[in-house]
Image (cartoon, rainbow, N blue to C red; front, side, top):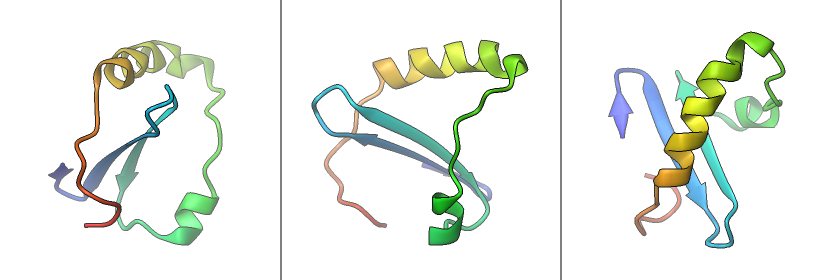
Amino acid sequence: MKNSNYKFLLADDQKGNKALVVIKGKQTNKLIEQLKEIDDIHFNRTAQVLKNIINSSSVTKKGGKD
């Protein structure tokens, strides 16, 4: 799914592990290497909504890169 310069990605290993990533701009290896956990308490409400989304979303078999 693409929306302007945003890319939304979901990885699912079928073992209950999932990753939801939102990229604004160009996806690069350097950007991915900079991923860190968000620890801002103001993000808590948004985190709860994202948890609901990731728990109810699934991945269709498409392959890695588009």
